[in-house]
Image (tube, rainbow, N blue to C red):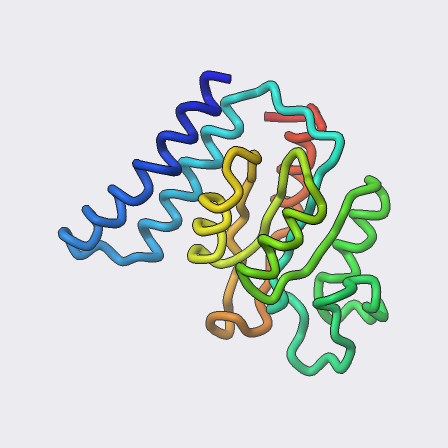
Length: 177
């Protein structure tokens, strides 16, 4: 309970203050947003008493390869499991653990998914901007955010280390800190 309050103060007051200070001291915004995500993740993990039965995995649409002709943004299970991107692995993971898995095209869709799914906790993969705004928008739902890798630039053929996602899922299942 105490950490939820501390996380709330950070999300509602500390995060905006960091952005203001970052602007004054000319710190790159992505660097500040990464700090916000790391602090949030630390506060969520320190709470230690989160055991979510209704857990949501939320992925960005850019994790799907651009050359794929199958669109998975409205139904991730449209994926043909060709193995050219990580979607197949996430579908397998969600099915193994009986979890909800969604792919969002942006913040508005992601917020709608959260409202409709009503999760107790979220493991979200996205860029710094989308993760930090999602953390703010969905408070007090605990979120562990994992920043995607962008070898080709933003919003195009991104990757994520699935082991980091598994670690976050294990935390919410009570199998790790």
